[in-house]
Image (cartoon, rainbow, N blue to C red; front, side):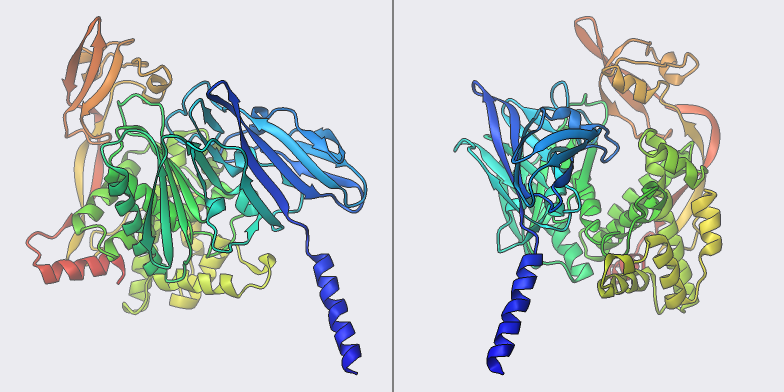
Length: 568
C-alpha cells in the first residue's frame, strides 16, 4: 500500500514537473566599434511549442512609442526558421519542443542623446546605455508568466552595469519582469545603496547635477520608506535610475516610468532634487495604484487614467504629507501648482473620449487625467467623510479594493478599476458614484472643490486673476531648438522686445501659469546675450483657486491639520 502511494506521488510530481514551462533565458552583451558602444546584443533562448510553430512578439508599441522593432537588426534564429508574420511578430517553425535561440542587436533610438521628456526608445551612446525592457526584449507568445533568467555577457570590467533583473536574493523572474525591466551601464554610472522598510534601494545615476548621489539616495530612500510604511505590504529590493536628457534650460523637464520593482527617471540638468522627489513619490505609488487595486482595461486604457494617474497623484500628496516628508507648505505649494494648471488648461472641460483620442499626442490632454483624477480623489474623500461622520475616508476604499485584489484566485476574477472603485465606494460609505462618473469622468464637467474641503485649518480661496500669456508657442519653440516660434505681436513679450526667430538660452524668472510674477528670458543676440523681462498678462480673467493654510497655527494645530489633510 505504501509502495503504491509512493509510486502515485512520484507520478504526480513527474506530471507537475512536465507541466512546468522551461525558462526563457535572456542576456545582454556589448557591441563596440573601437572604444565606442555601437549597439547592444540581445540573446533569447527558449523551448519551442509542441506543434512546431512559435510566435515571437518583438518590441512594438509601448508608452506612446510605435514600431520599436525598427531599432533592432534582423533577427537570426537558431533551431528554427523565422519569417515575419506581421509587423513586430515573427513566426518560428521548428521541430517539436526544439531549443530556439534568437539573436539580434539593438541600436540607439535617437539621433544623439535622449531628448527631454520620456525617452522610452533604446538609448545607446558611445559610453553608456539605458534600456527599458519593452523596447528591447522579444517575448515568445503566451510566455508572459513563464519563468525567466537573465545574465550580462562580456561587459568591460571598468563599466558599471545594473538592472532590477539582478536584484538577487533568490528572486524568481518571469518573462513579464524582463519586459518591465530597466537596465543601465557605463563607466560613469554611480551606484548608491540605502536601507528602506522591508529591503533596500539601489540608485544608479549619471550626469552632472546640483546634488550629489548620496544626497539623492537619501531623498529616494526617505520617500520609498515612508510610502512602504503607509501601505504596509511591500518588501524586497528596489532599483532607481536617473539619466540626463538633452534639453535647453528654458524649462525643467522631468519624466519617468514605473517598473514594478524599480523606476526609471529622466531629467534635464536643471532639475532640482525637490522636484525629482515628487516624481519619485508618484512613480513609487504606482507599485500599488493601480496594480494592487484592480485591472486596467486592455483596450482604451487611457480612459481609466483618471484613476491610475489621478489617484496616484492624490496618494503621492497624501503619503508625503502624512509621513512628514512634506510640510503643510510643501503640500500647499505642489497642490496649488496642479490646481492652477487645471484652472488655466484649455482642455479641462473635455470629455473622457478626448483623453482616449489625444492622450499621447497632445501635452495638455496628457495632463488632464492626472489633474481631474486627483481632484476627484479629494472630492470623494470628503464625501466619504461626510457620509460616515468622519469614521472613514478614501483609504478605506482603496484598502478594500486591495483586499479584493489579493483574494482573487485568477486574473479573470480581478475587477476593472472603474467598477471595483464604484463597488468599494458603495460598501464603505453607501455612496453611488454613477452620477459622478457621468458628470466628471465621462462628460468632463470641471471639478470645483468646496472652500471648506479641509475644515478650518486650510481653505480653498478663489481669486480673480489675469490670464497667463507667454506670448509664443512653447511646443513649437522647443521643437525648433528654443528658437522663438509663433510669437504674438500683441503680447507683452513682443512689447518688451522679443522677436520671432530669437534664440532663448534659458528662462531666468517667472512661473508658468501665473501672470502675477514677472517673466524673464535670456536670449542670444549676435555674439552676446541679454535678458528680456515682461509681465506675462494675457487678455481676460479667470477664477484661480488655491489652498491657503490658516495663519498662526501652533505646533499642535499644524500636526492636527496635516493629519486632517493627510487622512491620518
